[in-house]
Amino acid sequence: MKVNRLHHLGIFDEDFIRGKTPMTKREVRILSLNEAKIEENSVVYDIGAGTGSLSVEAALLAPSVKVYAIEKNSEGVELIKQNAKKFNVKNIEVLNKTAPDGMDELPFADVILIGGSGGEVAKILKISLEKLKQNGRIVINTVTIETLYETIAYLKKRSEINYYFYEVAINRYFKTGKYHLKKSENPISIIVVNKK
Image (tube, rainbow, N blue to C red):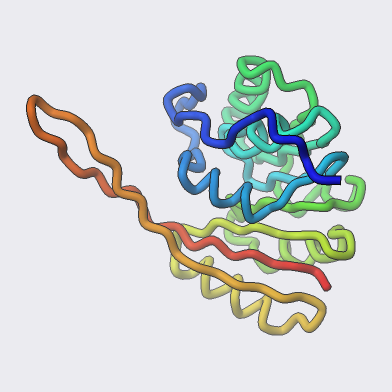
């Protein structure tokens, strides 16, 4: 059954409590969650959850969705909890762990979002594919060329999946006086993995 989307994706970045923890920007969040195709009763992992922006928006899609937000930094863990409270989200469980630690204890996932890997992307992908249900999806956001290369090199070796990827570059415009100035965000590569 498809999700009845009462929540429209794209909470503005400034509406999240942020601190100094990295956050998936609004436009990348919209693309990533659209690629994730989360449905009713889905189990979702958000690995390297940061501020919890992806976790919150995924959880808001339907009350029956269960999100496990995995974050190694204690500041990030507190921000995820604060943002879940701010947006009145009750279906997120926050795990203060360094992935892939603790993933083997979780229920099998329909969708896995990977935003931070701490240099352990191959290990995280190995466990993710073991924990992913048949026809499940993994959506990976990478900022560095090294993480993109390591991810694709690993995925090329796996015969039980299909994948595709693309890069997005977001330019935002800000009003200053009677003019508008452009500010470029870091380009992000989005990799989508389907388990056959």
